[in-house]
Length: 458
Image (tube, rainbow, N blue to C red):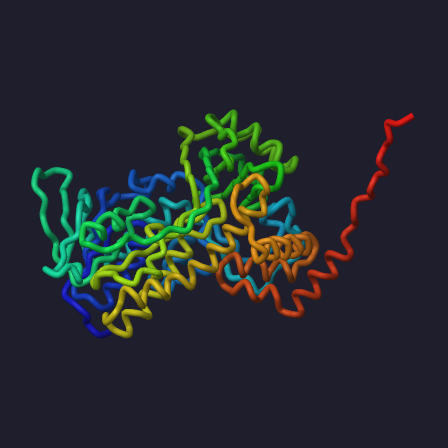
């Protein structure tokens, strides 16, 4: 690999930051990852990743990228206790999406294996593999309080650091700075300090609040690997129950559009018991909570449009949630971060000339697919406020027809899994063979019998 500079600095050891650091290590003599938290000695929930205490899914497309960047890591996760759904048995997942329950019988032979580690478990394994690289250093206990630049501000030359245990700031020079500090990224403010415009933002307010609780579930009480009941018109609750490493279970319950969230495990049960089928209800009623409940709020899905900026300094790129943070119930964040890493890798292979523009344009292509998917799913709920132009309304209507087919058609279900898993483009759902199946399923679906209106006259 061509060496493009002496040092790259990555801000944040989020999943996006770690994957970006792995890619940067191929082209810079040294890579320094800066984080507020000290690197953990074992899997644990870090203060800097508050959403890590809640349910996460690494989609198949994201898992493939992680395994490409860190060969063999998926096998390591499985060996250390992470469950793997590798047989395509539809009886092992229970999904309700937009009021439609996925077909529960048959096997999807063409589906890539899905791995179900908890966020802390996954992060720790990736961090261990990253730390093994001889030219990568993880520097914990530091905040980034500014960017340094050339005299004309046209190039970022490093970062200004504030150590948690020292009174003075320090400067760390860099040929490339990669911001992966998440939704709270301060780069828009730093850009203004350097004389650049901050990015405009696309936003959809969802007012999501969710609560999670670790559970001890009797062995064999739940045959499924994962249960996920997504919001539906008239009921904006989300219930997810995921079997994680070493027999542990995590339940996450969410409420959207300002609806009252769960404050306690008892509140979570009230919501969950009305959404899940009888055998899951029985398992939950017998389960024992482990530790305390965790709470998190997401006001909106937000996309900072760095790809639209005309002026932007060299030596700086932004990735992961620092660019776009989606409604997390759809499980896209880590996989989009992985696709960002792929885009960065391809851009760096072509050198660092005009890197910010090329990378932000490439990143936006992957983000756009996930963004439309999440936003259209939210706008399919009448309770979510937002504009619904004709294209959005048509997409929502088409999605409902596809979901109707998924209730009974295994082939359509497999293609939908591949799209939501970011293995295939959404256009694959529009292939003639899939459209024919969708049409047949919708024509065969029994329609509710319309009752005659009762007249109060006479």
